[in-house]
Length: 114
Image 1 (spheres, rainbow, N blue to C red):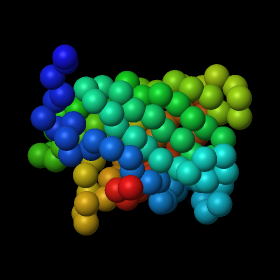
Image 2 (cartoon, rainbow, N blue to C red; image 1 turned 180 degrees about the vertical axis):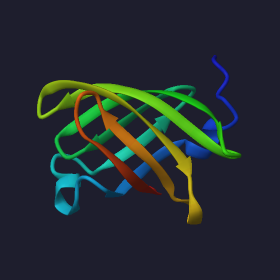
Image 3 (cartoon, rainbow, N blue to C red; image 1 turned 135 degrees about the vertical axis):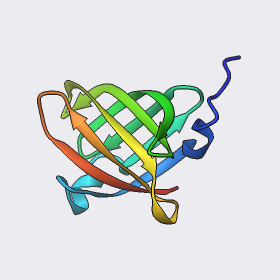
């Protein structure tokens, strides 16, 4: 069994996307509840709006804080899509980061546990 990186434990589980700079309100939950999920050593998933994808995650530290950097691939409105992003544990136990769609939009985001 592969060893789970130490920093991965801080991110493990499902995080509800509660805010994004580029997409707002009801759009976030258009198809599924907007979320970012981290599983095991390097897996995860993301969903918001009409986008859903699988993550390939690398854990480490940035400016002294635990950080998860990821690439992703999946679908946006049934079209193949891919990109990258990062997340850090912010204040009050929230997750903060930035999400990028290759050759498309990007947005900062905030997540809460659950």
